[in-house]
Length: 488
Image 1 (cartoon, rainbow, N blue to C red):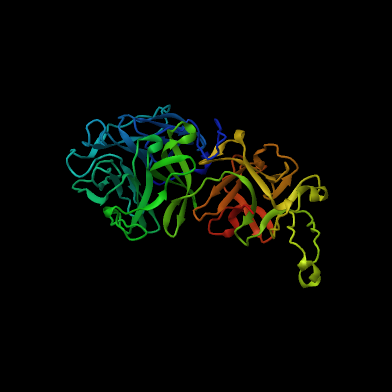
Image 2: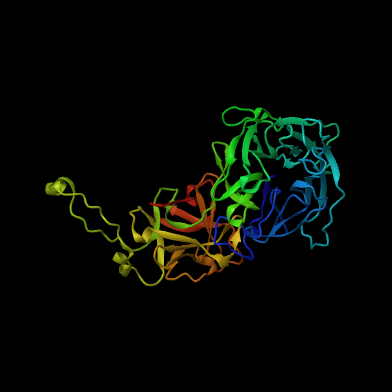
């Protein structure tokens, strides 16, 4: 439920397990009402209703093990300085105590239950509801305003309004004399984020807790002030029930709720949520991670890259990544006014050039890559597939990139260039991390670079010229760093 910046050093470690359904988180990602992801000592954490939570060593495979005392529902977590502030609803939501809700905060130096420093402070109540007023104190979300340093919490459900209070970022207590403000209705599990001069209020709309019958979805409004008014894309105030869709059901999962934003790098963001039901995992509530895009100033869920066979197209000029081989012409009878008799004959489709037509002309060893006009040719068609044993990063597995119909694989070199090797071996320099950027394009990064220690954190496939691919430092402001996948 809150923006965090994640260190690139943890984006891939040991891969624990893999599902053939690439778009699902793997391992045991079972959780309800997850907090925003938090990073601590090389691992990711998220907490859920009931007191427990999930841990991941690489951001792709998840397992239980996170600990949070107090039980209750819908926590959020935020790192402030060198400590972690946890906020949660102790009752409310129609649970024990009905709508008599209480929201509490507590601190910990670490999120690792095995650390000697792992110890939560005593919980402090910051707000409550009496079951009769037009609010239910549950489902809190945190925002540390990057422009002022002030700390805010939003909370509430369909049982009344969404409210905003201010907390002290040094103590986690409510600011003395602060009065709660109503900022929305007709949603719950709210969250606040800040971007480019706008405050965004994200709320979960629809019905929850009914498995495959849940209609949860996430909507958003924005304001120039943290206190609102929050207005959607057609001018409706969220206090009047407005909200622009961010993510709804699809892809055999339904009921997305409890938004969280994670910033990985400039232009690389991930949204977290839970799905009330994953049809392929028995209808269980699971953690969901999706690319977060920004379109015309509004957040929207992107689609996780799954692989397939594509033209890999440079955003720089629109040319295609290809093997540096001779262009083999296709035989065709001369067209148009040069051959008037032909115009009277029946139309016969021209078949595509096949791999068998040209592969005999290709060198047997390594073949460099280049960029050129896309012409539907075999040396321009790439099959991209997840590699189950290779591990993952936040939101995805590593992929291999091979020429369609062959085992010839794209690889990074020690000279910061790209080439293709005759056969994929699973070497780290042949594995690629593919992430959708906030503008909808993609960055493509080798897992490692030969001769350099550790995971590659900075270098991406880069269009150094209209015809020259290379590896260079990622730069979101440059189209040289960006690629598209076209299925022609």
